[in-house]
Amino acid sequence: MTDNALTLFNSLTRKAEAFTPVHPGEARVYSCGPTVYNYPHIGNMRAYVFADILGRVLTWKGYELTHVINITDVGHLTDDADAGEDKMEKMAAARSQSIWDIAEHYTQAYWADVAALNIRQPAQWTIATDYIEKMIAFAERIAPKHCYELDSGLYFDVSTVADYGRLARAVTEDGEGRIEAVDGKRNPQDFAIWRKTSAGETRQMEWDSPWGRGAPGWHLECSVMSGEVLGFPFDIHTGGIDHREIHHPNEIAQNQAFCECGGSGSMSLADAANSGARIWMHNNFLVERSGKMSKSSGEFLRLQLLIDKGYHPLAYRMLCLQAHYRSELEFSWDGLGAALVRLKRLLSAARPLLGSVDDGATLAQAQAAVTHPKLVPLLEKFDAALADDLNTPVALTVLEEAVAVKKVDQAQKGALVGAMMSALGLPLPDREALRLRPKGAQIDEEEIGDILARRKTARANRDFALSDALRDELAAKGVEVMDGDPLGWEWKLA
Ligand code: AMP
Ligand code: ZN
Image (cartoon, rainbow, N blue to C red):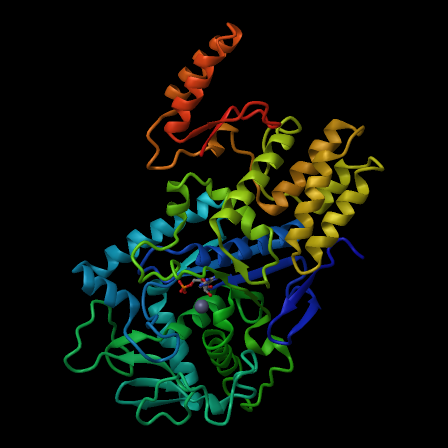
């Protein structure tokens, strides 16, 4: 295997394919970003941990990465197809707030989660409302051959492109039942490119266009921002698996239309590059059985809730790494607790080996630093796991093997472990920073330290009754004393 060989699963062909960049030495990646009408839930954040891993592995393999993530601040309806209300307008109306303030607040909240999960900054965040003129220009170019106008707006006729819906593999004679009928649509799957503000409707966000005052369709936004910044065709387009069904097939149809303008109209998807991107990748869902992930359910599972309960956010990153991105991942508090313990173990073993983890490690750098015969096979195994469609669960176990390997050059071992942690996006926070106090805890670290010190003295004086009483006092406040813990932790919150 050559050093930059990388196999990725392409949802469009449903095959694992060798990654061959469009521009030699480069990797251009677009990830569908959040609709900023509410906080992201931790399932949403799985999509960005996945995109981050993809980017880190491309860097690891020596490609110069350009990653773009968009922020959707207009146009996404409550249904991914053409039904429902605009999510942003709906939230702004419910709160009696300006839509711009809503977008600003939730964009900042999303960025805070991005930072807490050690997701690298993309080269560019594209904000949908910054691209309205470009969206209108894109729509004008494809409209003559591919679109038609109805009272409610400009619609894309999916029968005008070859292989519509190939990505979803779900097109039936009647179309998908859940797509709401709009009077006059030629095909059930036709979708709005531009939505006109209807008489009597008030919108905070609307713009003039050749098809009347209104707002762009959500699918149009991603086609325009990805093509504009990365150029068609670019290398990889990512999103959650729900996007494989409607959003991405519609983006692909628009991209085909845009790229073949003036051409024959039969640009087949047998050549994946005609879709706008060579590879379409989708992360599977994080699932939670009790329904707390739904944003409409009051207290939903967002990263801050995990932090408030005393789980370091990197425990959630660890949980994601433990599963392959194409597998469903079931969330449970026990699972998160186990991921936190695994993370603490890993970091306490790594800490004596290295001071910090540099971002952006590459395989070539690691190969130059690691020559010891016990370490080289571990580096190869780790690299092979990542190159095999980002197999992070296996890569993690190889990292654990590397921290445990004995009788090797410590500097080389540190270089290897640091490189592996960088590729997986695991930093090295201070030991104490990993222990978060739950919001509801009734005791602070200072008080715990004080009681533990008194207990130590009592034990030195062989006053076991007092020692036990102090232990009980801590237990009553939710603190468990951990005598003889192999990692040297003196206490934990029960
Ligand atoms: P949205 O803000 O709804 O556009 O979603 C942002 C991203 O999260 C998209 O890529 C979705 O496909 C993805 N997503 C939504 N729900 C989940 C989930 N439960 N698990 C993983 N990814 C998800
Ligand atoms: Zn998108």
